[in-house]
Image (cartoon, rainbow, N blue to C red; front, side):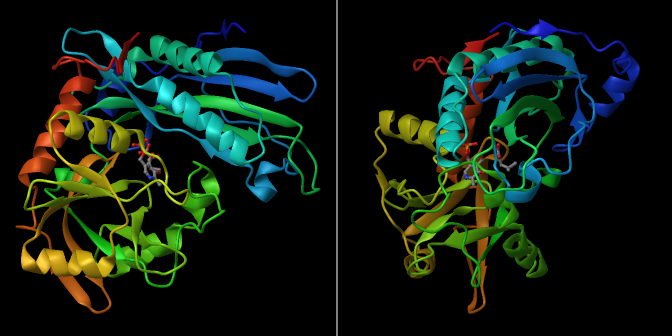
Length: 358
Ligand code: PLP
Ligand code: COI
């Protein structure tokens, strides 16, 4: 399947683009193009195109609008130290996209089409990668059910697209740490549910809990498991790590209710090859509170493509709050962040072949 390239006839002017790239924030500045591929039952994947970014025309009975048969990915294209452009572990995103598709009864997009769609889009819109430190091009591949039908069944037609957004830091003002609210009334995913899939519905259902976090003066919500309401799972859009005074780390295991983060996996590998003991084990809220108080727990951090590695300074519950370490960025957190970012930006050796040059 080859992509037909149809360049945008009226792209954003260079001076206007430069203006938008000064302080892009997250997810508000978009590039000139988008990738589109269609799927039709019986015919497979077809009509691959790179075209001008534009609004979609959809029938109001398109099934995604009613039953949320939708999945997405999140990845970044970076400007390398030598001026080149690279993606970080894009095959891992391609495979996770297939895993999500299977869970949502959608067709699996071949890895090669996923990679080609992203490569082609970055190629044509590479001037949109901010020059600034910490800037990147956030890529959002997604797939929606486009059959016009109100019956509840897997769609027979799908639209796969990739859009790109010039981004800076996910958290405003480059805050030294974030605070978390432990959701009491709402959980994110139950065993057998869709927690391990990157489907829009998981995020829709996290919004009320996130609003509650904001109402309690916290930056982000952290979810407990749905069965015992005891074990820490993850944030609305990030995985979580705990660091102890003996230098070891812990992160919740992949039991089907949390997203298997690519940042999580990369940190596990980097830490282990550095000789750090990392356990993938359940960790309870009670233990977290007790360990923070006794000093056994020295750091906690959240991680993901958008948030990179973000220190957690404070945790709030209805019973009160507790501070982690000094409330700022811990030593191991800072070190893991630098290790990862340096590899992503081509400033450090890449022994695992994670960086794909374009
Ligand atoms: N958990 C959730 C719910 C997410 O949305 C994300 C973001 O993609 C992550 C974890 C981190 O995943 P990754 O490191 O692959 O970006
Ligand atoms: C990401 O880190 O890519 C995410 O998807 C998190 C959030 C922006 C949804």
